[in-house]
Image (cartoon, rainbow, N blue to C red; front, side, top):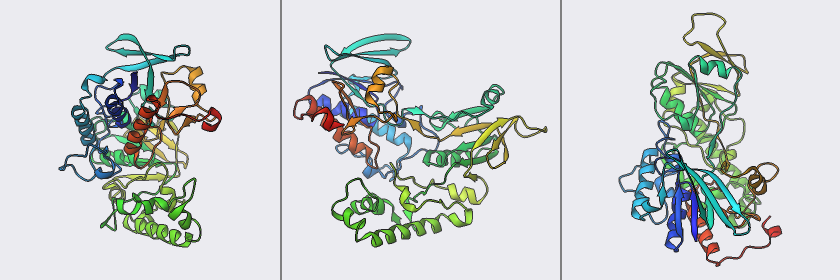
Amino acid sequence: MKVAIVGAGFAGLSTAKVLKACGQQVTVFEKEPDVGGVWSASRRYPGLETQNVRSTYALSDFPYPSDYPEWPSGEQVQRYLESYVQHFELQENLRLDTAVTGAALDEKKKTWTIQTISAETITAEVFDYLVVCNGIFSSPVVPCFEGAEAFVKSGGRILHTSEFSQLKGVENKNVLVIGYGKSACDVAQAISTVAASTTVIARKLIWKVPKKLMNVANYKYLLLTRLGEGLFKYQILKGLEKFLHGSGKPIRDAMLSQMQWVVTQQCRLKQLDLVPEEPFETVARSTVSLVTDGFYESVASDKIVVKKNNAIVRIAQPERQPLESSHVAELAAGDRLPVDVIICGTGWNQSVPFFSEDLNKEIVDSKGNFRLYRSIVPIGVPNLAFNGYNSSLFSQLNCEVGALWIASLMDDLLSLPSQNAQD
């Protein structure tokens, strides 16, 4: 088959490698000038590094170089993926700097017409199969603030962490960082070294895990294991998990309570008044948020100020001049903070902007969730698959397994159940 793949991150590249090895004709479209997805040079913020240690964030048949650190930097991950392309000879299959602007299904022929734009040249090409690998971090979310338009017109800046690629431009500025996830704290720590002031505005505190608990035990031995996984309730309980959430629940609760105590002590959360309201078990959502190196030390030394349980109400001109900044941010708790730059670590929307409105309605439910069988196949749409849409602690392994599953489906080695069963 002639297969179009959208996105050249972990999912897109591993899908291309597997399908090419199975004899398919593969073309990978990537809007950025380099491979890497979230690790692309154009999307990396200062201080970006992996949440996982390198042994748990590598593709199964291509380990990281032995001289890489345990937590590779964003630049090193991007270089690793460049090496993956070279090793598996995928260069000829890549079309970089090429954005997909449309994907239309011919329901009779069951083919896809893919429209792209590159260097202002628009082209259209027909493919037998389409695999969407644009990822769950596809569309950055930036909140709307009252007064934002006037703030930007007067020289202020509002941007997402994925748009913040260098420290130049925030030196000696008053910077507000929105959010309390890994990206927000990473950016805040990097900015605090050059900014006039750095304030983190957190709507809600979350638990973070140090890379080494008690500065000794690597967190991977406690959370990235079958036992660690079993501490957090899954949809279907069996085996050890069933015990830990049944008769063994006191043991499970004691283990989590001990970890919560260690993290609280190690990060000095009580002294900093940064203990989350929810229990430690909420640390496991789609990923574990690691402690940013130096972040809590910077909070303790007042290089970073955290305004918890708070949000920006509006951006306004100061009532009195002169001020260090031309504007102030008014917070829900009543604070008025001078501001020159706002950087938002406020997450992403998972979307497929190159699909028509009708097709998007067909593949999502009323809440906007993608209806994907095995997190891969949209129900009722032929010759279309998604890969990398099931976020987890081992996303790169999911991508590889998903690619093998798609390859098996293309070769008729798998048969899908009825649409009702898929749903």
